[in-house]
Image (cartoon, rainbow, N blue to C red; front, side):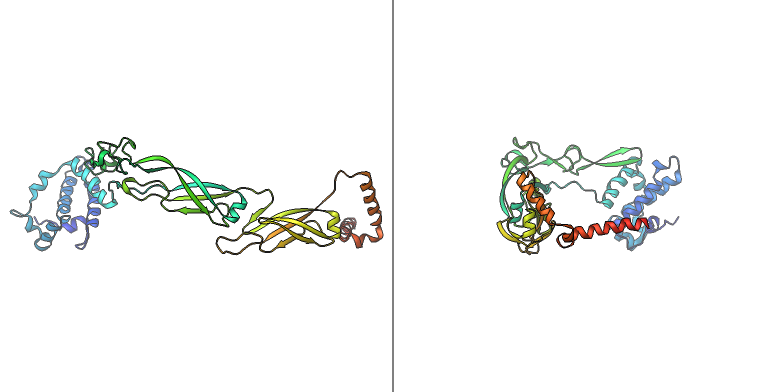
Length: 380
């Protein structure tokens, strides 16, 4: 009886690569494997056929000969014959191979690399507003894993090399059979590295790293803001087995200031003035990040008026443009008045008579005219 073409058996083309061959074999093997078709002789026969096709086509040398000479190359006297496939057939081992070798190649299951880059770290650095605006150099202490000096990060005493793990035979993965499935898991003996340290370092217990606190001088540039981050390369945790260290991120946390509030690169503050200065005008000192400056309050200044002082804000760390200082004046009502002061205020009140209310208190006049109109409209 003429054998069916191996490529047709697996449902692939003659130009298929190894990955496509394995994928096709896996799909058919799952369908026809005897463990999933108990007592079905036809499925067992089909499984043998696709296994035979797979073992020929996955081997580059056998595949080349098959492409040139067909099935005749594997008849009596050739590379193999049907009996050799029958003799090698085993339900358990074959299905384990499907999930192990084939699945592993398709999905890229490999043992974990011994050399692993160290973890990145983050340090929250609290600053006052002055330090954030002007910049500062800070010494910080970082608890981190650093390379063990005793074993130079190898984890072994006296420079001994790790040995191949006896449990997974250096693969880093083991296969556990569950019913007709074979599950691949990380080896618990070597944690996936494929190697074990027989004589671990006394100081680091074989890890190659020890916990230390290191001190670092951090240069905070002028103009940093809340939640900004500064990256320090290779200042994180040490890597395993000579791998590079991780990075350290300094997160800036700017504490609230008793006078100033920052919005982007501008600074805001409130300046209390008495109502005499608001009415008559005058000069007043206001604070800035760099010291005090004088500003002129014009006469008849109303509460809430904002004065902008150019170039007294924050120098932007990104654009290098300097923001402004915005001072909002608040007119303060005097308290704890003595009798003389109260009498003077009464005299002032009487001088602001009805005839002058529009001239002296234009906002009050406008407001009460609006109130009057509102109630007049309600009664119409």
